[in-house]
Image (cartoon, rainbow, N blue to C red; front, side, top):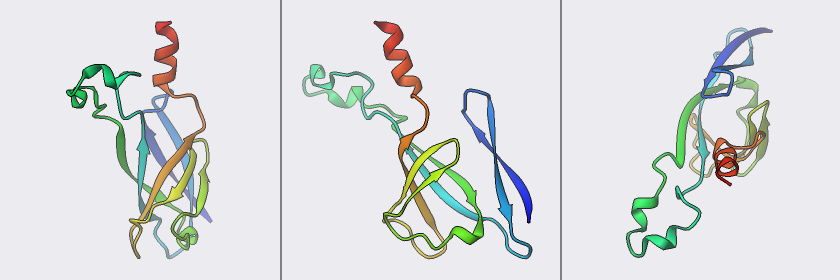
Length: 121
């Protein structure tokens, strides 16, 4: 089995490489990966009194394309998996034949937002 590398942007080390096994004669399967952050920029969106939309985090959802080993395309909706060095993901109900969608349910590292909040205290 050969290996290809996928470069993941946005990690603390500029790039993180994840190795995907390649089965001869089969291309890696492209998937959609959805990662979620805090919906609001502040801890108290209620203080915006009727104008809470101003506090919505525009980056609360990040959607990326990734690749997965083609031998792992038999996941069913709500199956849970760990993507090595990234976190835990669940197969989204939006998944359809030929289009797999995964939602991150828990990251492995403490988020940058939490670190930022801790530094403010």
